[in-house]
Image 1 (cartoon, rainbow, N blue to C red):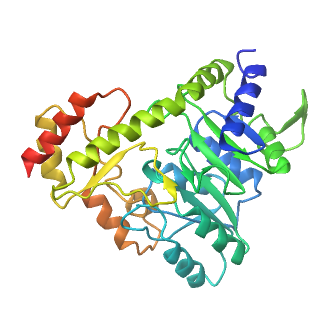
Image 2 (image 1 turned 90 degrees about the vertical axis):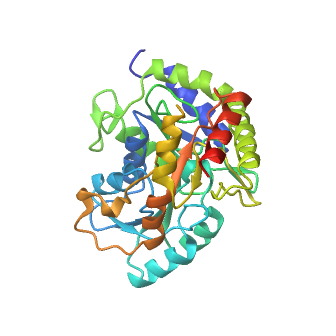
Length: 334
């Protein structure tokens, strides 16, 4: 079957096992994976989902697409992920009227999910992981995807593994998995029996076949990214830029290698002049986007990050010569 079939089921099972959970439900992309997870967890109209303002906009858009309201808490200035203290402060500000936390593992570095899981338990909240950039990343040797009530991955072409376009919801909860599987397939429980209102968010068998091959290669891709990151960090150690951190209990998979400097825009121009592809992820905080004008948010740390972060090449296709050229260009600028 080209549209959906045994190969998709095999990919779902293999990816769930990779994450250390019981169930996987493949979707058409990472954004639909998020929306599917929210729907499967019965989050929607009248609910509030707390998340980060410093992420790709899909994190917040998916919340609105399921009918819920995004609530933003500020980030940790070193990890760029949700600051657990800011999360607690925001929950208290809303007098407990928060229903879930969406933790984004930005740039491939896991958020402090162990603390966030404790907070979710204390306030009786659902915890969802947006692991779109963090395939294979770990916290205390447990892979991301295994900490929340559900977790979502993207297989977009720029991600650490790809299916061309695709996504995945993983969970240990069989009921959530069943609801997710129905939602991505028109709410179908049988060939022409539709027990829920759903979408066509299915992954194709062709994409799943690509995903299965990519999953086998993912550990090697991760090691290559980590080796490249280590070489970059060593080369930039005595420059004015801030290089990525890796807390002792977490394993970064470097979807992006993101440095920080107050002279970011000048450095970007300099690297461009030297034919080095660098990018800004992300130049505008979500709550400062025109689509979010109606939101009153205080997130000064996230806003400061948008002015100073710059991601430089770390992908597995670059070699030691490329990395030395990147380091020389950054050092030459300063």
